[in-house]
Image (cartoon, rainbow, N blue to C red):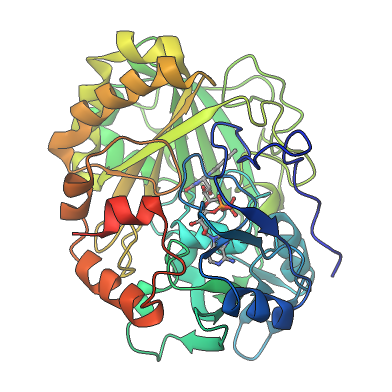
Amino acid sequence: MTAPAPLRPLGRAGAAPRNWAGNVAYRCARMERPTSVAGLQRLVAGNARVRAVGTRHSFNDLPDTPGILVSVAGLPPVAEVDSAAATVQVAAGMRYAELARHIDREGYALPNLGSLPHISVGGACATATHGSGVRNGCLATAVSGLEMVTAEGDLVTVDRTSGHFAGMPAGLGALGVVTRLTLDLVPSFEMRQRVYEGLPLEALDEHFAELVAGAYSVCLFTDWRAPRFTQVWVNERLDEPAATVAGRAWFTAVPASGPRHPVSGFPTESCTEQLGVPGRWFERLPHFRPDFEPSSAGDELHSEYTVPAGEAVKALHALDRVRAGIHPVLQICEVRTVAADELWMSPFYQEDSVSIHFTWIPDAEAVLPVVGLVEERLEPFRAKPHWGKVFTTPPALLRSRYPRLPDFAGLVREYDPGGKFGNPFLDRYLKQ
Ligand SMILES: Cc1cc2nc3c(=O)[nH]c(=O)nc-3n(C[C@H](O)[C@H](O)[C@H](O)COP(=O)(O)OP(=O)(O)OC[C@H]3O[C@@H](n4cnc5c(N)ncnc54)[C@H](O)[C@@H]3O)c2cc1C
């Protein structure tokens, strides 16, 4: 395997390290990038406060620590496929783009990917990052085992046979520094992606379930300038029956005449190939190509809320009623589906869900009141924010939406009794 691509610069020399979007300056004492697991173990054992950081694509202070922020990107870039078990053991710091190419060469695929393949596997799983598809769980549902350095510097391995494993894959960095993950694989597959334009919101009233189940992965985009979806991205597998939605009388959206960026009018060269051209799974499932970072890299803020699938259409109408407040600070809003899982800290715990994502303009002062407006409108639908994005949900409300949070807090106490991996974010949202 080749070494992971370098991270984007951390900012001016001597300046505080920042996240990818630049909206969070980490308060850590310093950053470290050990090149061996033994070095990482010494670092964790020898410091009072430590936290893991991945590719820094989170939009809030979740990764931060008053102590040492440790990147696992310098550890050996392992990706070992076990064909008998149909799994891959992957270094936590590896990005999906690199992992996907490697496993595809060996005849395997992951069931799903997020919109951006440049995100680290460890960081994506820790926050229950997801793609779309009614049958597809979040990326952490592929995790069948973890290797991690715990608070005393011990290297421990856990798998699905371990007690409380359901609390670990989406572990928010609270249990230790994950060095490797074992992921379930499926046989590699080909897909084709088509974009349709102009679907009225009212088409979802009767047909939402049919639309989102009409292909392996369906994503809807709106700029909330009108009660309609500007684009519908339909991704079908070549080894499954053809997508059904486009043939329906109610599906009045029309095929795009050329490639599209989710934000209408943005340059399309960073986007995965469309127009029905067949391609590998990892070159179709994400919106952005593995060999390009999006043209708007960093010039955006994100928020995202998960609602039960059965409430999604009502939730979208609730947002439509305040779209005049939303669209001035919005680049694009995306609606995706995520299958229920059993992971304690996953927003999709035991609930087939719909996620409503917002790419905002990079102006926190203008955006935050609108985040509050969106949260107020989605509150009746038991909305849960994405762990890695901008949100202002009151901690008590957020806690009430996670029935297994007390179990997770117990697991954190068991693995990290001294609070080495704790931080203000976890204090806010995990402590009762
Ligand atoms: C352009 C863009 C597109 C995105 N698209 C999607 C999407 O399609 N779907 C979606 O759900 N989300 C999406 N996100 C959000 C993103 O997936 C999450 O914020 C994710 O956590 C980022 O991973 P990271 O490696 O950058 O993690 P970081 O931001 O570096 O860290 C996030 C958390 O993971 C923990 N962590 C990281 N590495 C480890 C480790 N080795 N061991 C233990 N804990 C670890 C950190 O402690 C922290 O708590 C997107 C973000 C951006 C910027």
